[in-house]
Each structure stands twice: as C-alpha cells, then as structure tokens.
Image (cartoon, rainbow, N blue to C red; front, side, top):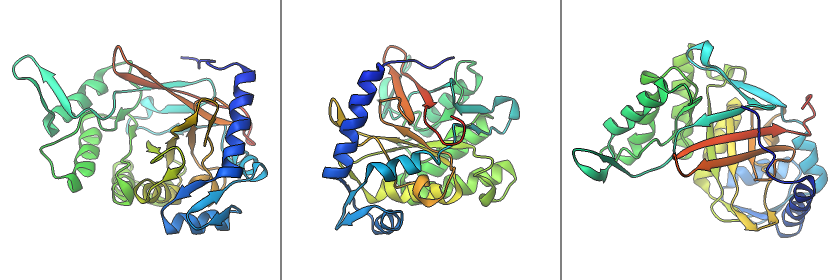
Length: 289
C-alpha cells in the first residue's frame, strides 16, 4: 500500500521551520546522563539536562539515515520493507482490558495476549506482530516484556514490535531476537527483526526509561520509531539526534513527527478498527532516498 500525503508542502515547511526553532532556541530535556554524554560528543550544546540542536547538525544526521530498510522475519517470505512508498500495518497497542462473550469486559491476561498474537499471525492484513497487543495483567511487571516477546516469537513468524520497557526490555528483545534468528547480536543491524516505539515524556523531554531503551537498541542498530508529543500545531521537536543517528551512521531508524519530511514517519490510528499503520518516507536521505 502506498503512502499518504497528509500535509501540503507548505505545511511541511512551516512545521519543519517551527521545529528547528524549538530545537535550537528552546531545547529538549534529557534526564539520562549517558544520553547527555552521547549528545555532547555528537555536537549538541548541553546545559544541565537541556540539550540544543542546530539546523546544521540536524541535517547532517538526517542525511545518514537509510532511505529504507528491511525488517527480517523468522519466515523470510514475510519480511517487511520500511521506507520508500511502503506502508506496514500493525495491530492495536496498549489496551489493559479485553471483552469476550463469556465474561464481558475484564482485565487482559497473557493468554489473551497470545491469542491476539495468533490472530495477528493468521491475518493477511497485518504485516508486523506484537507490541503490547493487550496488557498481560496476570504477569509480574518485570517479567512482562520477556513473556510478550516469547509469545510473539512462538506464535508468529512475522517481524514484531520490540519492548520499550527501558534498557532491560531492550536487552531482552536484542538477546531473544538473536537467538530466534540464530545470529550474534552484532549482526542485528544487518538483519533487524523488530522496531520499537519510543515516545517523549512531555513535549520537551525524554526520561531515563525511554532513553535507556533507545541507547541499547542503537548499539546494535535495531530500528526505533520515536513518537514526539507536539508543543503546538506547528512546532514540536520532530528530530531525534539522541539515538542511532548520533551513535553511528546509517542505522535503521524511524522518526515520527507527523510532518512527513526528511526521515519522517506518520503514525496513523484507525479508531474504528483499532489498527495502526505506518506511512514511512525518507525524502531527503543521503543514501538514495
């Protein structure tokens, strides 16, 4: 399915200009010391926890992102291309409740999660499985990420959403992905199996949990989608230098800023069906995009 053009070129330019002003003049808070060190080393101005990004620096790292990359499935026939004119469909994400005919509305369990993983596996309209299909409330919080990953890997052979539950969840995703594919962790940049949603804490900040996960994934080059809360209609921090782009060149990365510009990804939620889809396009990549 081809991508959607939601904003006009004039709209895109307005959003991009406002974004650059916020990044350079206002800055973003990063409450995670390792991230501050990486950002400073990458050329950002760091004042306490507030980080400032120049337009030149942003454009430099945007140019290092690939125009597209492939998510590798356990079944190679179900590999998914992210980028270009491609759109990938994923299931709903994050519900704490489910409803069935026997019990009505109730807290969801791991069994429910696995059932949704199986349904997403057999659906020809779902390209990427996993994420928090529903919250497995009967599992301890510190064990949920691994249980959900195992369920998706066991009951599906499609690419999947990795865990965003801090650095521990990221490490579990990396280790389990390597085992599933029969490769070493340092080969995951060449053969990534998953992407992960990382979202800002507020319109102008990232916390240690999100940043810890970002940096773990960045070290092995696994894909991430950074969702940014808007400051206002035409100005939000739509660039994320703090993950793979500052750690190394050409890593698999998606930046969701609702603008569709540069390494832009628009995240659409279909409220009627509960499905989400990505419209990813890399308009100004330095690698052929």
